[in-house]
Amino acid sequence: MLWNKSSASKFLSRKKLYFTLGFITGTSYSYYYYRKITNLKLQHEREQLSTTHFTPYKIKSRYAVDSSHYFLKLTPVFQQKNNVWDQTRGKIWSIQIKQPEIMIVRDYTPLPLVLHKNETNTTDADDDEQDFLLSDISYSSVSDDILLYIKKYNDGEVSRWLSNLPLNHKIEIRGPIIDYSLPQDKDLVLFTAGTGIVIAFQAMLALKQNGNSLTIFHSCQNLEQLGPLKDKLLQSYPKGKLTFFQSDMGNTIINQAKFIPKPALNSMGLICGPEGYIKTLAGFNIRKQIQYQSRGY
Ligand SMILES: Cc1cc2nc3c(=O)[nH]c(=O)nc-3n(C[C@H](O)[C@H](O)[C@H](O)COP(=O)(O)OP(=O)(O)OC[C@H]3O[C@@H](n4cnc5c(N)ncnc54)[C@H](O)[C@@H]3O)c2cc1C
Image (tube, rainbow, N blue to C red; front, side, top):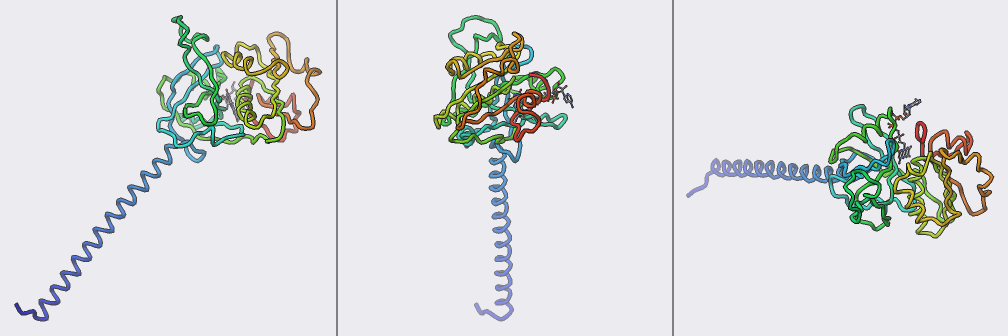
């Protein structure tokens, strides 16, 4: 067959057309897959606990200590790549929980403890203190669950809302928010009040690593408000390192102030609790306020 000029140019233009079509299809597919992978990566990132966005967690269990204090165990909806305790070594940290209906957030301080059912208890009672045990976690613990000790205010927006949500309900949280980096080379004297006691547990975990000592002065209405945290503290702490002040017994840090040791050279003090408590102990000139609660214990 003879090729004339016009059939050669027809062949070339068809070739060009095929090439162009192939190029467009190839580019579109590549772009489609690139977008798909990027979106998947983005979605994967959004599933991980972070300070930059909210991540879904489910309410796994709730245990009421009394009418105004409860434990809340949260579990991530998606498996977490990083161990948050490992990420926050030596730090005092908190998370923020979002109340989506009125779009507000509140801070809560995770406990480095695991709350589980006491299998040896055979009573049928619900929410019985005997039903629950607390065990320590370490930086290498694998559980992604988050345990909170919460004070419920009858007119408090978030603490009241959380106390009424059904089990398995999804909520959104973000964090870890670093509230304070504990110095490596100092003994710590901690003054806590109310739910501020959770800071003592975070500090215990941090100080276990570097061998510095921790002395705790805790103020509350009564020790029963602490639920199983009370026994956990008494087991973990030798006498002299832990002092309780119970206002129901007329025993407050103010009227016992003379028993508090003077600051030592290699130690530092931290005050954690409601605003009024911080102001009473530290005065109005505070450099850093770790925990703030609007009112009461
Ligand atoms: C870093 C950090 C960590 C924290 N960790 C914990 C924790 O582990 N556990 C815990 O229980 N709490 C913790 N808190 C406190 C917690 O964030 C909330 O403040 C608390 O739960 C109350 O929130 P709420 O929405 O339930 O109550 P809110 O709606 O904020 O109200 C709380 C109380 O204050 C009163 N109130 C509100 N506004 C005013 C006002 N303008 N004047 C006077 N009274 C007012 C309300 O009537 C109510 O009685 C932490 C706070 C911080 C900053």
